[in-house]
Length: 379
Image (tube, rainbow, N blue to C red):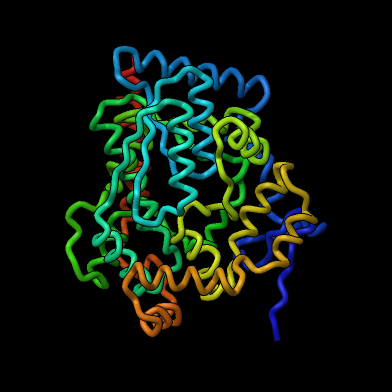
């Protein structure tokens, strides 16, 4: 007998998120807590306009005399691609930066080429060593942990930050935003920290077979230094405007020839596999609920349309067979090995050595002098 889940009366989040709470009217904690989160993070109206103008001015001033005034990370998805388009409209001089972990969809590659050519930006691509990427990803599959996207996410940000620092560009602009990401359930990713290099390396040591010599990695302390703007500053311009994803998509299609893909992260074949097959089949989690609920809460999608989308499986039987076959061949796993990973005992990320305690202590006791020193440098 299928288990029944309580679902929010305003969005489509339900009790598959084990941390969710409901009020007397059946409204979930994501919906009721959104106004407070948005007030703190998403600057709109005149407040956002002033913040964006200030950000653009700071980027331009800091970049005087440099080849580039900022780096814009490009994944080939809507958020980062539209940010690159806006950087052109704002008169910025970014270096477009992409990390190729070997899982780009054809559409992602085409979209990156389209926006770079349209904006006439220079593009730098960090092509990761495939044998190392493969070994880490197979190790994570064997480890039993939930968040299988950690290796990619860790490598992307480690490469972005270290490259920006090495070429002495003062700003990084990222496509993170509340508009499409205001619902990110920790229970849907296993309370993992993609920036925890100690956890990643511990899992790889236990289940990997080859040394990691070039795989991009950042420890906790250095990551916190980057995040606190010590080596360069990080800006999220989409949180300083009325960012509307459907409207952004139409503008990208019209102006730059962007080709849309299905799903939230269709630019990566592995992320599509992880979110649309691995999570539903191993954990009973449909991550589309987070993505669709974000759009509902921010007024970009009706609840009825979201429910209609959820009534269909994320993958058709043909798509499911294709993605499993593709992942197995690329990772050099036979079907028996793949099934063994899929049915292996579930493990928590903190079952393996990690830097969670060190991160808490560092953030609490060491970051305030770092921030003070940074402010002194800015004067």
